[in-house]
Length: 302
Image (cartoon, rainbow, N blue to C red; front, top):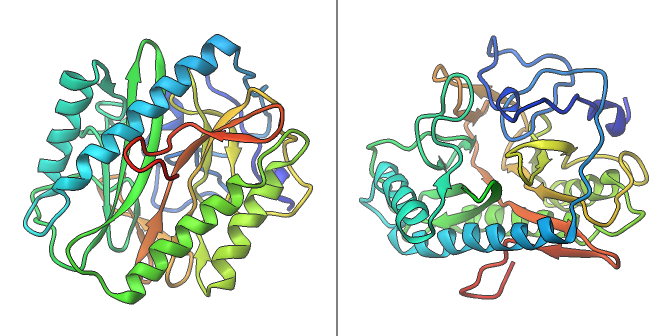
């Protein structure tokens, strides 16, 4: 099947059906996931074209998500637990930014924490816990803030203490895969162009792209159309238009792409226990190209 055929699924009436526990640990054939497991459905709904007023709100929410990731970096060190990180994210979203952590109690079963912390071989949706981080770990922290009816969603990789050159290379290549995909975004381009660019960078480096999970549209809904695959063929899939906003968030494995979902129904790990990395940005399609809405205010870097 072409990537465009894989990606079709109905936009739900609410975000909740997109964020739920699978009925079994076996993924249905060619299932596509927007942030968390969804079942394949054969029809597609229209992608939202955001108004100028909505775009301004999304710029604000993207900045808030990026500020939260800037803030939390100082606490990522050996001996700190991911539960401690999660509590600080909650406090920052609520008490400093005046918003609310969208993941908390979201979905079915309800997600129990305010952010996702995916350590080492965890691909995504790692649930914060009381296990201390140790020197040499790598961790993805994924935050989504909700405020004034809009969402801001972003994630970054963090090194815990001193990490190996092998782990650093995976982090760097994954970031470049994301940026290669983002650089393809412009009116008239396709989502296949974005996915192909991500895939090419990752596979040329000897890594694999997770195919069961993808990026997603975002705005008033946490997750909506389009579904953004991180692999594909040039010229295939949805044609991009100004005003679309979606995430580009490739999950890249050091080993093979295959995965398994743990008994908690959320945590996704590499089947071969190899390291995995992910970066995520929100991207607006502009009249002439793209705008990243979640650039770090502290560094000015995407």
